[in-house]
Length: 197
Image (tube, rainbow, N blue to C red; front, side):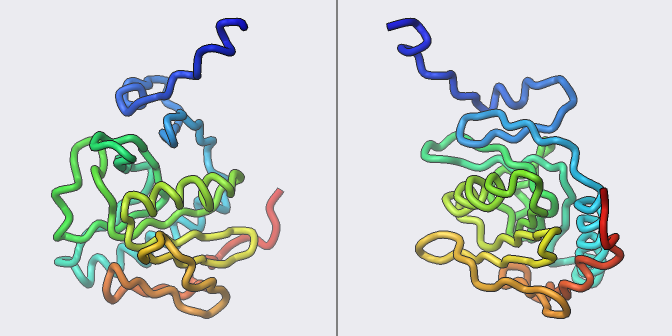
């Protein structure tokens, strides 16, 4: 048996993540440093559309909390007490009552709402990251699909983050974890080019 067969690959830690200095975007998922390529233009248009709505909401409801746009590091605990995962969602909302989770280098603990615009690696967002968010106790997750132009709303239940609705067109996405926040799918997907190369 050779040395490779006997040794398991080293799991990356938060310390490894924080020591990266190559200016590329990574996430720490299940002990693996996962490189995230720059998002496509359509992804950025959707994030900007979401931010317009979230910022207008934040301005009306100043005392409720604050919206943050990615990249922002979200440090989440795994099976141990120390943070084990660092995810970089597209948009988060952190309610005022949870503002102590905000530190200089990111959010330590679960935000109240996470929005992920699906990337080319949809399985990472739909499966791996959703599982991590569920295990950490995230109350609500929106998965925005640029190709299908749908929003999957997942909410926390006893069995994890469950899909409660898939919305599209003029249907409105409403948040239970951020009272009063609602956005029409048509606002999220407005001004998207019909086709991009």
